[in-house]
Image (cartoon, one colour):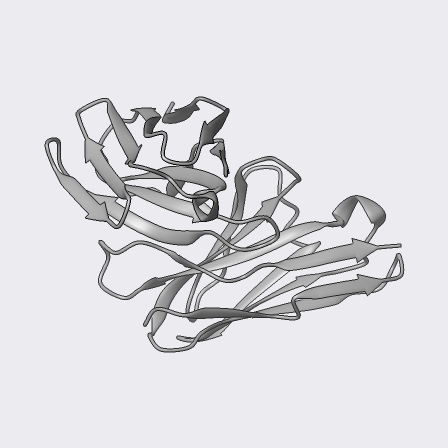
Length: 109
Length: 116
């Protein structure tokens, strides 16, 4: 069965304190891995797509990396406005997206 | 680009009534649209996948007669919650995938439904 897990479940950082979020997956055939940000009461906002091991994508303070078993979302010098739930999802060939449970990030000023 | 809208953003209705939620892709054509349900502090649960011009595919455990999905055009899908009950209260989110396959899904802002 295709599975996606995320850790930690919740993370509290001080402003400027860099860290990483993890997304681990067990799927039969990875077509793509996606990262989203979701603010409370809103729909997820697309951040990155990664297709193959070794690939990296960056956007402002965020950097996503991918290996054969997991992906990391690195947050460098976070700001309070980075507080949100970060979701990862995998797309398996011939199937729909499978979402992880998310990591709730709080960045304190 | 890649904007998806939902209407209404929130709705309150009485038990037993039906509620329709619209999902539109504003600047791209979406051959496939997805409907999700999300409970507080939980991740997205896929309810159904709709393809333009064909019947929706429902996930296991989702009642197709209760959650009617129509994908009338390449930019519009609707979800109708029929005979709504308090347990149907939730946050419903749609997403749309551009034609061509490898791109991500783009999500709407969500609709909060409260059934009294």
